[in-house]
Image 1 (tube, rainbow, N blue to C red):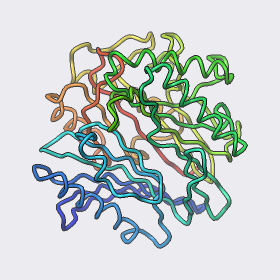
Image 2: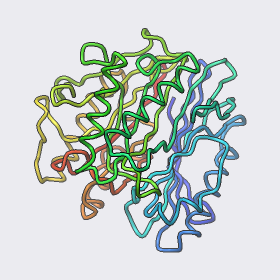
Image 3: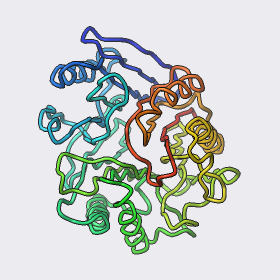
Image 4: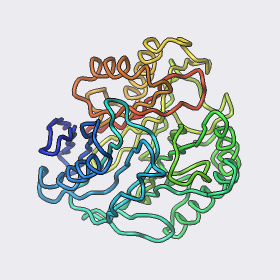
Length: 371
């Protein structure tokens, strides 16, 4: 069961919180944390971390921080000020949209788990039931072009997984590629990913991995790409279904890109639909509503809903959404449309160009429902 709550802290920070409780015992919590803007970064930072650290006190006993992604407006000057935390924290330069906001956070908590560094750049999340998840966050390769960096990170990630008896093909469920100057460097990411996937047996006739490739960057200006990933050694092929949305979207391989539109994972008594970055595209691979932010936002949402339905979920099952936009001038229109279509949904809106210039807006999300 999904429930949503919205509150404001005494440090002027808004928290939008989703709680998922399954009868089989699974419990998961997702929060979007956004401070009031137009004040110094240090003040916004303190307000965000105060809210993030206080989340377990607002949740049932046993809630533990698992993962956070911190969105910064200027990571070159801000990232060094972030406090260390004993769980996976991804940091990406994607400016939150609205009112002078310099920082925002997406936070995931789970019930009755332990979190520890597992070697090879991985964080291990182990449940009381023996379940295990791995997170990789903010990997970079300074000085390499985007293709070489992507190959290097994916090969090293494969080795890190192998140390735990996992493979990229069988156990990785989600990747993110944050690309500096995406209009120039995304093609290298595509070529690098294709190269490694071919080596690892990930093809159009087998499967790919749910993914987002989007404009973003870290604090090192020499890094063209940063990489996050999520994997689980517990996942077996019978638990996973790759969703196509064929009435509305085409296979990504038709335009030379290797990722799944969405992935359904049935595990631990719940259905988890992981929706990749999804834009205003049709089943021929063409941009729909060129130059029209209203039309593109509507079609984007329609595409997401088709994928959710194929996975046995509905919009009310979404735990959160991340919405990326190319043009800051579209911020108010997109936020209004998302709120009207999905009232109360925890969503964050970011200035982050989509990988094809004609796409003005893109959205990713996760949905949970009892199986």
